[in-house]
Image (cartoon, rainbow, N blue to C red):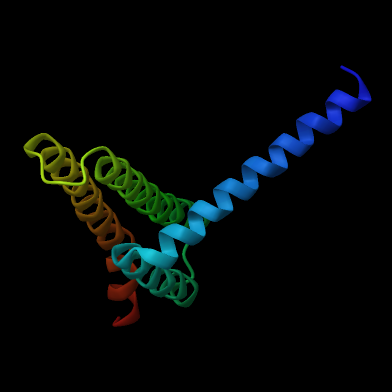
Length: 128
């Protein structure tokens, strides 16, 4: 690979990060549910510091937070494409959007259960 093509490679990567950052700003700037998830994530992170989670518990918590953000992002992207393809109501578009929203909800329920598994022992220890 030549130096010129190396610069092109890195310039392309930088542009990719720029597009990704734009998507993140769009997600948290325009989607109410993403804002709610962000606030809850901030509270969970504060609680994680307060309770002094272990390294493995931190890994679990951060992966759960990331998974919820990712699911919300995919749901938002699907809704945007669906609205472009079919601005008027169509039952299949409605079904796709409902399933995507349901998938986010299923993940959030699982993450809440994981959060309870991680935090309840710390809360119990606090009252001993």
